[in-house]
Length: 118
Image (cartoon, rainbow, N blue to C red; front, side):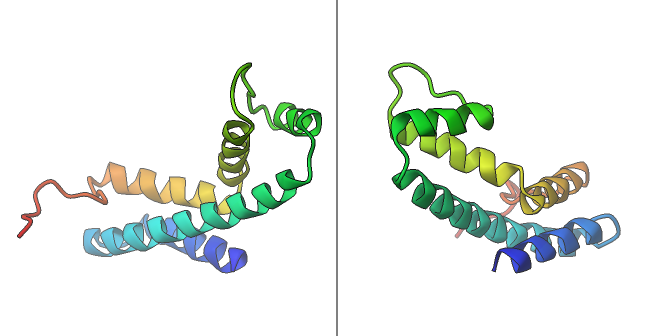
């Protein structure tokens, strides 16, 4: 599944350079869904790995990933930071960032303030 997410996001990012505004909006919406699915899958994997770690081992992993575990912060906060750091360093997350950047440059947003809500 992660390979499909990555490939789809890479395809959307590449297509963003030349597709219509309408298609870009569709791709951005689908890309956002894939981003969320990828983040969820990565978070699950990180949480499973952290479940067996003692605090000092978790702190070492945080240090390795440049994720601060601040004094007084809960273990769960450090794990949340690790989840996000692990996800944002993936090709899928980077592809989504490129897609979102292209959308921003073309004034395409997930939330359109001009749309009327019923």
